[in-house]
Length: 290
Ligand code: PXL
View 1 (cartoon, helix red, strand yellow):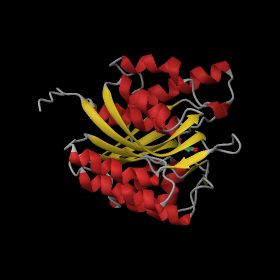
View 2: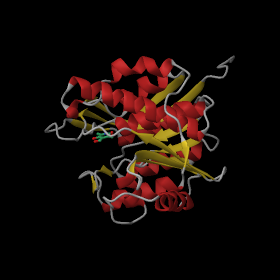
View 3: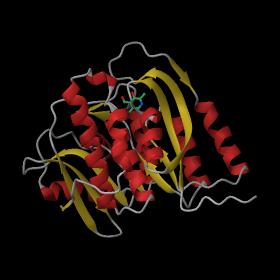
């Protein structure tokens, strides 16, 4: 069969889909699509909303869907440029993600280890799940924890204080030692007073940071958007630092736009009005050497 896909890229996205609240697949699909990357969603669960304070969530678990979907894709002899995982609900789901990674060894393995924020693990993410996530991280090429998740993965207590450049580099290097050659930590307060997303590329031996403006509200789903734009950038020719700049610029634009309208933070960022920016090739935010 003739399948000329040119230089177009394809990602298997193993995430839940939350109907309302703009997170997980509802933001991952449009963000990657508008960057010209095809998304093949592998939904792990369907939820009426995210779990961040919108009351009783209607949920249907799809754990038993993941392997049959994988087997179908193998039978079709499909390939994926990346396999990208995020919020996961059980050890079993983590095991299925590992099987996805094993089935597509040439894919970029991206793990966004969604486990918590603001110094606390989500109540859906107990110790066992945290240990499972650490195992998935060790099989990844690139990970994108926030500072809380980075502390959980390193078994260290969450520091509210800022990080010096050498502390920041040490965290990145220690996470990389567990497996992934590229590590990003989002939402880090540096000792210089700047908020930043920081990154390390072990193969290049390079540490980077991209400063971002502080906005006094936090929105669910911004980690998913950040990781999606990062993956989209990496798959379409960006270096790690350029992809970090692109992802930081876009999330900042979405957050500032939303903040200016004063909408309920639980409803997420106004992705629809920010999305067209992703069609531009230039980036605004620049990266610095950490
Ligand atoms: O954005 C991460 C995420 C994904 N999926 C669900 C969530 C969250 C964060 O709260 O609740 C269901």
